Length: 165
Image (cartoon, rainbow, N blue to C red; front, side, top):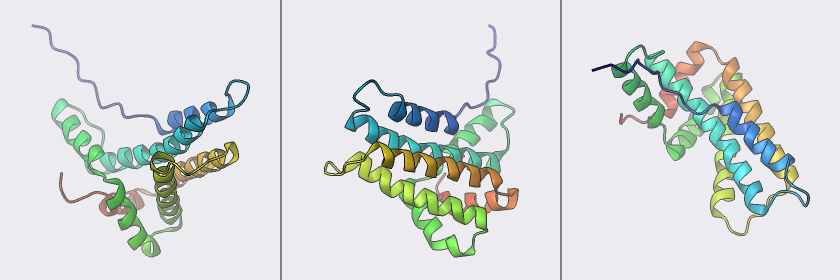
């Protein structure tokens, strides 16, 4: 029996998600992107930041997994953040956060609200310009996350992860 070599988790790449949203909106066929494409791009911009925070939280909690058991723990931390819990917790704690963490928190909260409108409000109309705005907000959120110190990322993890593994 041959064993399969260990493969660490491979989460979605946030920058690739944002790039796909950007391309869908700005490289559409003649006539421009459809309403559905624009809504999907806004939603995808939020999910890029969501996945980036998930990966940061998992790295803070478990480092880089070196074996299958550690990979399971890492994946559990990656999947533990809940949208509403994270947004409410970040809102509650934002005044105590450092500048970069506060920028990330504010952008995440705003992106979550607009993602819900894009996904669930049939009366909400987004323009190409609006979608591009939210794509820029998501890119700036990723920059803020990357600028955060290890201590800030630990605080972010403590604030955004629910207590239930």
